[in-house]
Length: 259
Ligand SMILES: [Zn+2]
Image 1 (cartoon, rainbow, N blue to C red):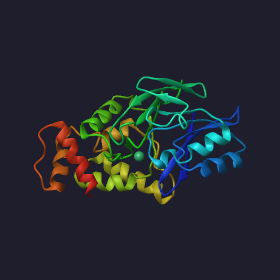
Image 2 (image 1 turned 90 degrees about the vertical axis):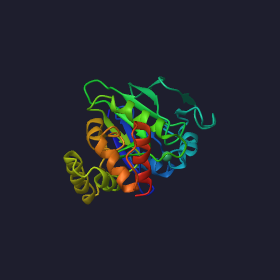
Image 3 (image 1 turned 180 degrees about the horizontal axis):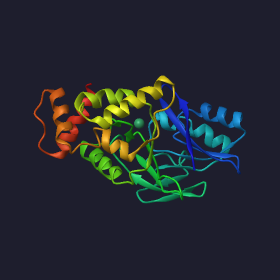
């Protein structure tokens, strides 16, 4: 099973996986129907299903039109209207995409309804479809959830197999790394990852997918329990470093928000 990105809007990726025998695709967070419709026409495939991670417009904006055109199942959070989501999901639910079973992880923080999808297909690296929860080098802003919730999400994703391939929705990598380097500038893995990402972007290629191993080593929001990361964020805020993990995580998030 391979996912590849269809660019949408300024910096979104609609991740697609194709079944060559069936000539069908599944789409993750199709915020723009036209991007998916163009792909289907150009490659003579039809849409077999949709996964949604959360309710933001740039993730669901194309769902109604695509569902009407292809009469396909739509899997997503319970918070969304039954008119949009045919299969509402909760923590621990499973669903099958092209013979591969995905497990649902609830990761509130960016929004309260945010879901991630995790799979371990045979003979390949595990897959995490993580929407706006985890980006390469960053995490989603806390529009609805609390720092404690997002910290919990990061801690749980950090426990996934290190070779898990991480498919976030946005190409925010270089901006994320500018911030990460400002608070964690001695991190050699981060310096290396930034150089690699810069080369990819120079060639107009996506910096995704990432991996849990790379995020664990380089992403400041996954390094919330490293004293130097919290101290770096506190310095940007002109504050003392927090003495507990939740307030430390909140400092990293506020430092990024104001960066
Ligand atoms: Zn979002």
